[in-house]
Length: 328
Ligand SMILES: [Zn+2]
Image 1 (cartoon, rainbow, N blue to C red):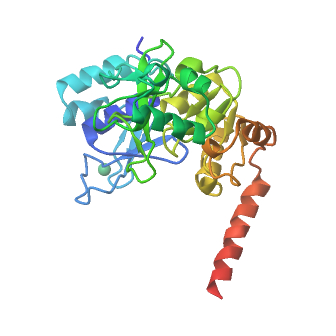
Image 2: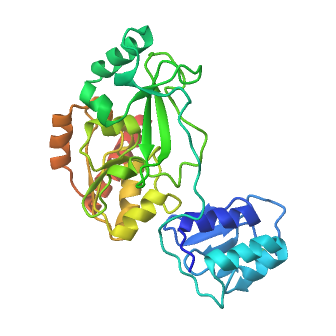
Image 3: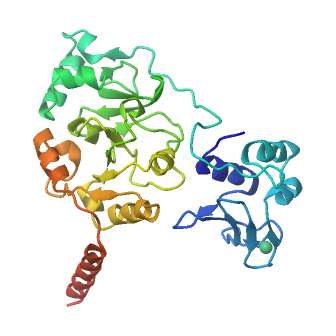
């Protein structure tokens, strides 16, 4: 029996039918209907139920209990076979669970990657890297723990490389933070699909609260059971999201302060829809977790609260008040 995650399925549908759109509650995936094929390609009116693949077009009224007929008609033989094999069909009921993905991305560190504590300590770049880390309140012990490294390749030079490993201890991602103020981009990372990646998976315990931060350099000040979302979005397309649902893992959401009344409540609500316990860590006075000390983060985590309907109401009220204030 094939095991796959919802993100695998959506990626597969997109490979056959083009870009789709996932509904806010994650229950429907909308694509351009190939039957009535509207000339406006942005119209996504064929709605597929993500759990069972029944679909319905709001324009032409086409209905189907499975996507197999459409894949047979508009896809290739290979895609149809793949659909049947991995995602099931009417004769092979769907087994949509989260779990190991069918394809694994290969990723390598730069060839000359060297752990910072083992690099030539007289090298000016190495010295500058230490200065940068100490300036951020990190220690040599942290450099060992997070396996910070350096590379002399042009793209990665004068950056702190922070690798991430999957549960088998294999590299699954790395990010590289510039140590020089004006360097752009501030963070550079390999061009891979980030959705399947769980940053720092090797250290995560799913049966206790997990702290979610946006970037890898935020998690250096957080407790051990922390992962980075590698962005400010989290939904059914992300393996991390699916894994949280699978284990029913309680979440402490510690996104950057500027997300407080935007993405933070959105993500919290999305997790709550799946009955995940969520508390929100207020890091607004510092901007982001990476700018806090460990002690400060511990306190903020201890004071984290759930998002209540009252908060929601207050946020909206604040917005209304701010907007009307602006009118005067
Ligand atoms: Zn249609």
